[in-house]
Image 1: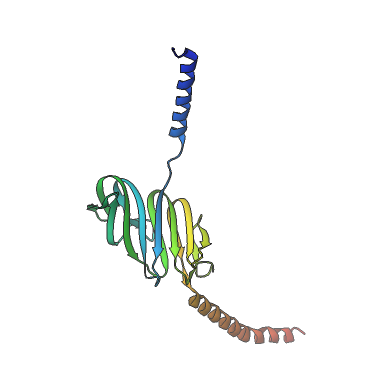
Image 2: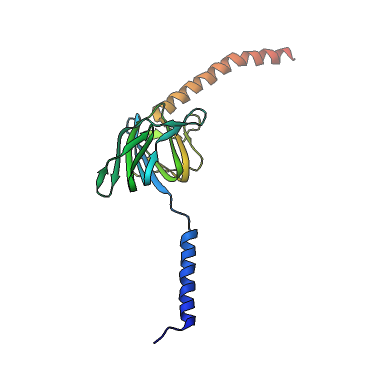
Length: 204
């Protein structure tokens, strides 16, 4: 039995519609997970990569690209670790494919920054004992969603981000800041009150 022209046109039209949907659908962003170590002195990264090149960099003081100094850099494929080559400072190459890159970077002044050449879905995990909520000493860059895991870990996530930043602190530092600020307010009140009191008396 032969297929009618109408049926064939319908099948072709359906296939074209599906092809257009697949072409127009945005590609899913790669995933990057960063875990700050319990003592806050470094973080470990696990980054999904597609292709044959990856640049490791961080923004400088003026926004320039500064090669990232990493430790224990490894590239993993489906069958385990693969060899990579340092093309130039901060840029590595490997055979074309899909990989996961892992490395460790020291953290300075409780400041975390990660930058990418294309949008990534990013997750930053802070161990129990570190906070970001106080705006005076903590900060999460635009788009970050903060949540708490049952084990006390703070999870911060971004969708389609190219640069993310977190400034975290310990509870002890927040208490110290609050105590220091309260002491300065008391001292300021003691110094300023006599001035206002004398002006008030002089105005009578």
